[in-house]
Amino acid sequence: MSRIIFATGNQNKMREIREIMQGFQVDGENVEILSMKEAGVYAEIVEDGKTFAENASIKAKAIAALTPGDFVMADDSGLEIDALNKEPGIYSARYLGEDTSYRIKNAKLIERLNGVPDEKRMARFVCAIATVLPDGTLLTTEGTIEGRIGYEEKGNNGFGYDPIFLVPPYIQTSAELTEEEKNAISHRGKALRSMREMIERYMNEGTDCK
Figure 1 (cartoon, rainbow, N blue to C red):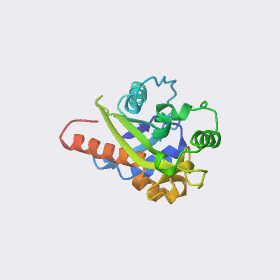
Figure 2 (cartoon, rainbow, N blue to C red; figure 1 turned 60 degrees about the vertical axis):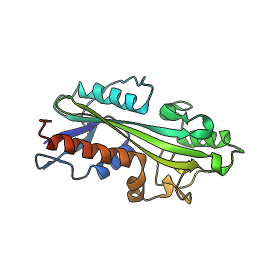
Figure 3 (cartoon, rainbow, N blue to C red; figure 1 turned 90 degrees about the vertical axis):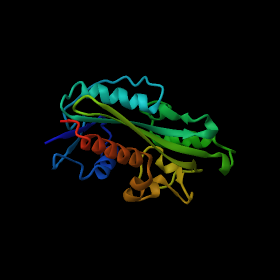
Figure 4 (tube, helix red, strand yellow; figure 1 turned 90 degrees about the horizontal axis):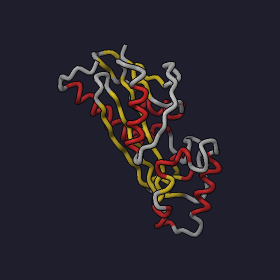
């Protein structure tokens, strides 16, 4: 059976990925989707790219080198806030330190936006997906969702910056949406669906990806 190894240990991401990639097949067989831990792959990866796409590609290439014959996917995603010069951006996971809780990170961002009116609190989630195919081909896609930053955390369904990110029409945060609602509009959902289509199109053109 073909496998997709996703270069993450984040189970929240894996849940989203499995939902969106459900039913993906190679040669008529379902593809097994595994995290690095589930695949028994361990690697220290230095993400020193300047963009989300560069960092996703760095991760995908590093894991692909250890798992020949598999599909390897990686994402790099983050929050860009216009009023903060698009911070935290590619440093979203490392903002205030990787071990700092998102409750503290979210509170700090809200504090930094103190006094900023609604119309200037615009922000977006960005997700870049990179996939190394079994033949070594590298594919990349990117998805975004526009929104704005709220004034307090709301919702328990999301993770990371979801509780402060208000989605259009700005009634609910991303963490207040159901998983199905979120996946339908999220940055990661858009990028993954685009990647799935790109892989299927590549394979249907007759190129051997096995």
